[in-house]
Image (cartoon, rainbow over all chains, first blue to last red):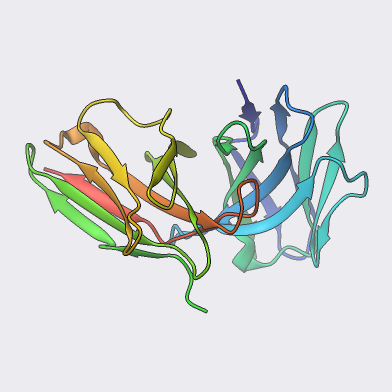
Length: 113
Length: 113
């Protein structure tokens, strides 16, 4: 079975600082995708970044980047220059195609002005 | 290009009534997924449909819950004889292909009195 673990229920960061959210996963599939989704108070699920497992290069999207360690099955999200609008729940997810998209329990990020 | 649409956004039912949740995928998307989110939890997969076919319903309770995605019209998640434990946010997502970015709708918050 596929599992995704987020060990940090809550994190906080000062505005303009950098924060890293942790995620580990377990899958028996060799081909899979990893995602970080953001859920603000509106509850809309917004894709932040995605990573294909076969790609060695870490994905980046503006202020968001990942540290993908395939051997360690680790997929952390780094948010640089944090903004007040980054405050939300962040969910890590894994999709292998043979099993449904599996989400972690989430990390609540607070941004302090 | 409209995103994934869900309606209603909020639904209140009394115990024993039926709840019907509708989801219109993004234009061109034939893969639809339903998820349930309990308070302070991540999203849990329920069912995956592809035009007129249920592909994977491993996350959906065997009783009282059903889903369809007809050739014409939205996907429907139907909950019969609702109980208080069914109170949750139900999200629909769609994708262009299997194992591809899933785009989420705004969710339907179901409250069972």
